Length: 378
Image 1 (cartoon, helix red, strand yellow):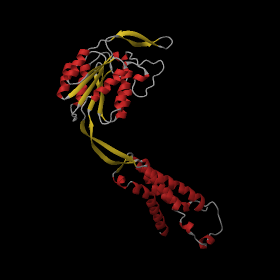
Image 2 (cartoon, one colour; image 1 turned 45 degrees about the horizontal axis):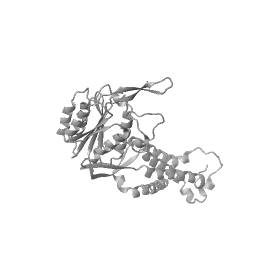
Image 3 (cartoon, helix red, strand yellow; image 1 turned 90 degrees about the horizontal axis):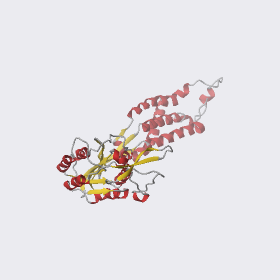
Image 4 (tube, helix red, strand yellow; image 1 turned 45 degrees about the vertical axis):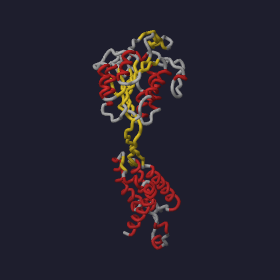
């Protein structure tokens, strides 16, 4: 009984010392902590067995050395090390408890930050029709940021639009941005969001093969963009339409989509990529593996794009090269009035390091004590 009380006391002392730093460092955080992998806490069920095995269980091992009598050991002096012989087992059990709890990954919501930020709600409607395969040559200085062009690679209209759009996203700080893509039909790539990193990743992965690009449904693209803004509480709502063709398909006409935009108070700025001239289009590869190009002409409708922009108090731009496309994208924002909206940001903190560090320290201390100071016999 006396030994049980001593082991219990050692366990409480070690546990208190091990948890002192985590709780003193993040006292408020632990009050609202939750576990990402709570099922791993089932591993704590082995801790009592480890505690028993490291203390009382050690005395039940089969002796490795037989002697005639143990009387000298019974009557011999007992020092401090003899009283602490169960300490390594206690350290091991507590360390396992800490490590298992750390693996369950405790996290804490530090605060729910709310701030009034100036910003606008923007939806970019990007054309993914087959005409975006046309070449839109660019020099390194024409592209925003530090973009290195692969040697021998000619950028298509879509390649250039993706680079410019990613740069456009990276420059925003408080604007909610969404992306809609359209070809023969329209689809939402992302609703308006402040997660610029994810949005940039999604834009970078876009290809012409993800949707049917056999035709251009400008009306459907605009209507889908309007649908993402109809519940927006921002004072300024903007749709940026990037296209290089004319409306030839779709369930919604561009005129009716424009009417829907005015009904929700959204401005539409149009950017026409290219003009009616013949352009190079990649058409397979030659026997040496080099890209082969053919000349084609894709019809555009600048009058329609100008009418859409004028009707919604937006601006119409024409970009025949990469530099003009980048300038058009940034000119759209320069002329917009900023509005305030409430942005809610949850701040999270991982708490597992505060358990992992003392757990590892106790494992090392257990090994040192067993090797040097508290060795058992036999």
